[in-house]
Every structure is written in structure tokens, then in C-alpha cells.
Image (cartoon, rainbow, N blue to C red; front, side, top):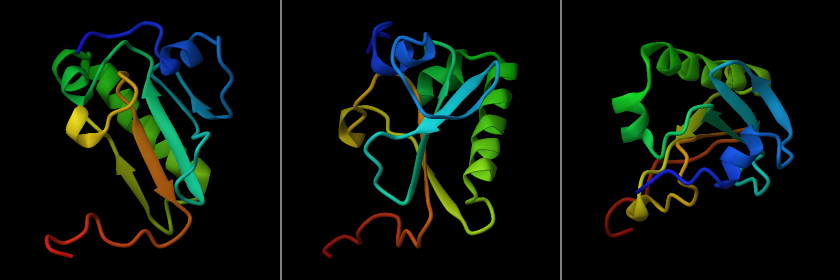
Length: 122
């Protein structure tokens, strides 16, 4: 999948679309999801043009990877979920229902989130 420079996250990073920011540094931007699936639901996106986790892991500079991981941790702290617990999720590709072709991580928290996935046969 090729990177689409007009995807919604690229437009947010360029300031063309609004976002309720939580944290920003030179490597990443964290902001609230506009359709939250938990009491706390935020997104963290790297500032580089990466389609997926695979793309990011393979082509990002070490400083970008480190900066991004630290931004996820900082956002969780600022959201107030670092002590009580949170889940991070990154969808990759069609089977995972990746909707936007820009690598991003969801942070979910604010309540007990239950198990990871339904058990087979459940």
C-alpha cells in the first residue's frame, strides 16, 4: 500500500484539520479520537510518512522509533491511565481493519477493558 499524503492524519499533522491535542514533540502527535471506543481513547501518530507498523519498523530512523515510543508513554501519563492500566493497539492491513494508511497507535483506558480477543468458539 502506497502512502497517501492526503490521508486524514497527514492533514492533521499539517494543521489542515483540527485535533484536540494531548502531546506533541518533533517525532509524534497524540490527540483524542473523534469516535472514542472507551472512556479514554487517543491516537498517537508519528510525524513521518509511514503507512504501517512494518513500514515504520523497517524505514524509520532509530531516533524516530525511540521518540515515537516515548510519545506513546508520555501520552498515557498525560491521559491519566498509566497507573490504572491501558491498552495500545496498532492495526495493520485489511484483516486488521486499518482504516487510515498512516501508522498510528490507539491508547484505550479509563475502565476495565476485558480480554484481548474472543476465545475461539465463544
